[in-house]
Length: 263
Image 1 (tube, rainbow, N blue to C red):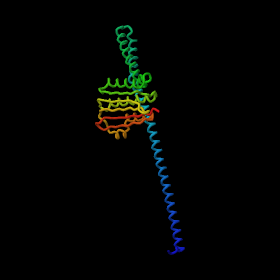
Image 2 (cartoon, rainbow, N blue to C red):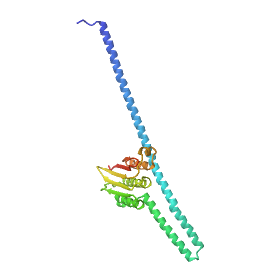
Image 3 (cartoon, rainbow, N blue to C red):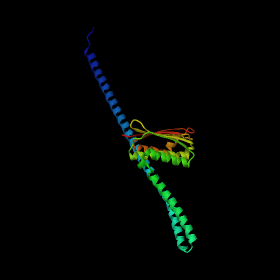
């Protein structure tokens, strides 16, 4: 075998050095590009998370503002109107103090207005803090709510509640509000005739399942339009670290699963 010349060794050494430099440069470039990509993805994730938190915050504010507007409207339209009418009747009594029959008629009208005002105040109070929720627990409050909705609608509600272990007043109130929101939406929009509603504990989770036979809707379109009902349900659930899973199509009703961790 012929011996290698000094030139061949030089070429081999030089070429190997260049190859090593190119390989090292390639590795460094790959690492830098990979790190840059990781940093970019991390920034995008943080931006998305920040946007999500901002949406959640604004959704919570909108839900609170909606409750305040509804309360203000109820107080003004119902309680305020009743009190104004009573004031007018009392003023009329002063001008007809000698007509006992007229005074008796005015008194009866005042009593009816007072009874109506008491009923309205009770209803508004119940909207703020549901009747029986703290005293008798979540199952009782939901059963009472469903009975009232059956009375005012033609919807048949099939309710099933297993043994509930949650003593968390915040979770209980939000679950109640979720059910209330779902039933309100069913009456206003779904055209449903039957609703199935269940609540159970499963592996340290509180699971709410809802389904109806209503007209359904395109979920993507409704979500992109930021439907207030969907927003309220999602926002309330996220306030207690829960998750929502909607399933609906036009003419196929609505199904919803809500999972809320209890630990």
